[in-house]
Image 1 (tube, rainbow, N blue to C red):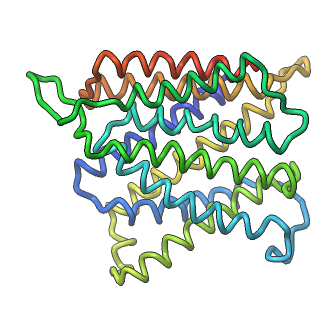
Image 2 (image 1 turned 30 degrees about the vertical axis):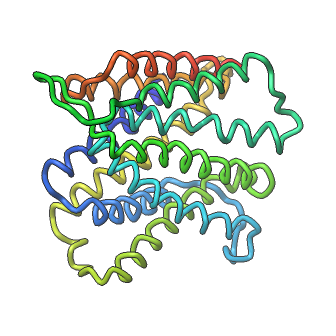
Length: 300
């Protein structure tokens, strides 16, 4: 359980860091690049897999690592912007509800994965939860202390929902056909490395100075973000691999369910208490439905 708590805290920390970057007027993209470099280094230091993958480029999964790595950094930019202008809670819900897309893909490509009535109910509730949680009235407005986000930015959580679902689907496909369990840790490190490389290439194309990356504020926030980013994955894997003294394990669906429920709940609390985010009544219905959907999908 302690690993799950650390995973939930690490995941929530990502959204909080993005929010603070906006408030401190720090260029987010520089921090994201440092984040992926940090996550890559941590992955190399903590990976203990002995799988023979050299030369790397000859592995069947290598093209997928390039594609997914590029999509990772694009989606991280969307997460950053969405957290800053839409809010932590809604961004988290859009991110976590995207799990229904790889579930649908899994049903198609995995003959052992069957669409049950309960799973179909969870998928429908998840889609409904996203649309209800991001719903806003035609114009952004202020009423006393109640502030909703400008509906002009509603496209961000929608892109995040579809984009993260697509990323997870590619990961699912790669794992299904090309990535064995002993290769998975190394595959993850390569994904982080590809994201870092993609970020550096984009920065070069933008012709912005690379010396920005070594500014103290960018380094500190980037390293903190990288530790949180890698930690959310590392502790989740540790929870999935956990065995008690009696040899008992926790079912993976339960681990993912508790993890996602915890992240959504904590993110909503942080948004409300720390950043004074406010929601319409229909948004609260969406938040509650998202929790129900995650629970249903975790037990199917």
